[in-house]
Image (cartoon, rainbow, N blue to C red):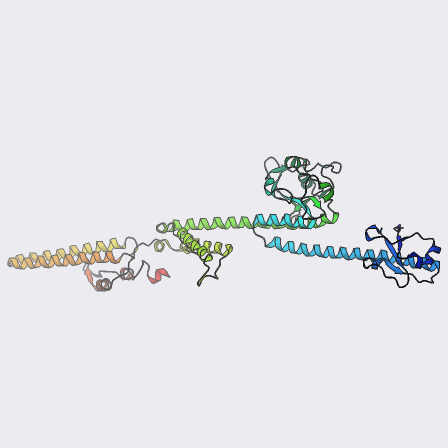
Length: 492
């Protein structure tokens, strides 16, 4: 059974409502708006009009109504006023809930999108302060240490104190501090006065207030839970204010600070859970990023070890390219004035530069480290071959000289043989030097290309008298490379 509220009955002109006197009801003349006591009902005579602010709590009484009819009309009017007040309250509550729902959606999207950890933490605290009109807020993250779990002050805000006031520090997860107690029990704590906590709960804020000349009064501390429902930290809000923009001093705390409401707890718990998941996701992303950075550095090391002759090349390409990219961002005129690379794009570009030679990891060794056109050892084989050809030529001319001497020919014949021997040996030496020059990774002149083709068609005879080309087909193919050290098949 509900107790009906006491209504205050007001009239604009009691003289024009003579039937009221017979009802025995306590009726007062309508005072100024500030003096009206609620709930109230304003009784109007026929033709009278209530002030605009009182339309919803006014009824018109017929001039000829009996006292019993007047009583009934007043009763119905009071019920209507109560119903209208309830309707207004329900509409206000529905509007507040809708606003909170929109805010929670906006906050959830923002938490998911933010990648910078400092901006993310600041956004969490600012949002919670705005929704509750809290003067201060702090974010605590749980970490395991050898001496036991502790809470680390990751971020903090206070509208009435200088930003540099707060210093990062740790508190144990125990019942000696409000945040430690909250994380220990895993339940939200709401204090009307931090200096006078509920029985069995720790006092909050005294040491901080003594150090910075502040007065902590109302306090709301909420545990943060991740998607495993494990408590990973806490959010603490202090001093809910009547007006968000008010700056608190020790003198005005008593008049400006109000208690946090039960509805605030539900809303902040929801945001705290979203924040915990967002922070956990950011931590995982940072771990993945660190893992990938390690992979990139290991890959660069592997690339350079595979090809020591180009060590440092990937880093130089990265340094030059990213500096050029950042320079383009600063150009305000010309073709590149509308080109701008964001931080993510610059990071992608950096990785691309560092890994652009990653294919070297899978290239066969003899191709990867091929510094000359011929494979290692081939030039020595060619030199040995030409030394054999030189000895063969010397033997041939020595035999010819011996035959000339047996035939008792004159000295001019022997001189001619020596001259031809010297010329042929000089030609062989020139060919060897030309082959060595053609082996270098430079652009080949036409005359050397013709010489190589000529040598590939020339033959010499081994000890058994079998013919062989002065340049083998593979040797000719490698030496004929116009530029660089790889032929088309090796490049493929």
